[in-house]
Image (cartoon, rainbow, N blue to C red; front, side, top):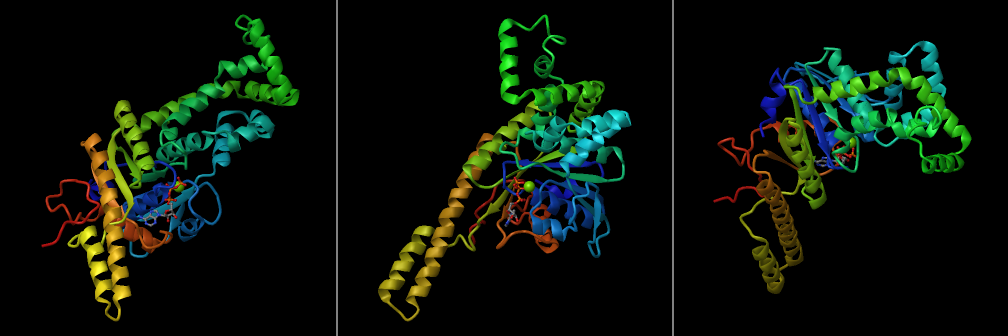
Length: 386
Ligand SMILES: Nc1ncnc2c1ncn2[C@@H]1O[C@H](COP(=O)(O)OP(=O)(O)OP(=O)(O)O)[C@@H](O)[C@H]1O
Ligand SMILES: [Mg+2]
């Protein structure tokens, strides 16, 4: 996967980093954005819940929902970063789509307040909304989008639909006003159901929902149109997806689902970043031979035998780990031979500052030492020397 060409190509306007929870989406997004700024582009990275230390080094101390310039000494381009404030984004959408009085009504509604800060999928939906806004401003050469820490990477693609279906939903209308909206459809069973729901949820909540839906009525079109437009943006030329996974079965399975979904939706995939791999220092010595050597050393019983044996055992363990990771990577590649893969070794500690991001950026975009021809291939284990 040639990410250097991808991030420097003026035709590349949006890069979306997706993947299972905790695999390195936020870090990869920030590292790619930094690399693009250093390659001369004007970049904004939209991060979602970045780890605190990473946020600090990007200058994101407060959640102001607007991009801020990050000082990158010597970079010919510009790096801007922002953290998504899901509630603020939702409020802005409401304000933009209704009269001030209506907006006020909605914003003060307890049901809206719950929805805008905790409905599952709100974060995904608002990330897309923000992406649409950033894109519309025409201020950026390149927008790098991090995605929320969902259990499933697919949530990001599904949320807008789910959200507009929900807001638009017959269900919710029937619930709040069975006698009006859906009288003809409301069976006795349904009326019973709605009475039970009303009992469980409480009359006040239902009245809140009802007021919310009434106030929102005029906005339905707005919401749905925007969600559809942004979804289409993801399909347009100039948008690329980068799927991130760690060399673990669950993360790779998630990546597999996502890759299939992208191809079904006709959305362009740049490739897979296999993050936090553990390549051993050398492959010249196999795990078995290292284990054997450790035993021999101990039997011989020289002065620092224990230390030497321990070092050999560490190497044996790393060889085994790398072999397992290579096996998982190979399995992914044989299921998806068309998907380019780039491996990024685990750094010694967390990646939380510009220097760390730069190192990761080089792993992502630098020449792949193992592939002199430039053909993408999955390498966890370094090439055997000699
Ligand atoms: N290549 C790497 N080497 C070492 N640490 C890494 C690497 N990539 C990511 N990390 C660390 O792993 C942790 C998780 O990374 P990150 O926050 O980017 O994951 P994420 O996919 O965004 O998680 P979430 O799904 O919770 O949003 C962070 O502490 C980060 O510093
Ligand atoms: Mg994250």
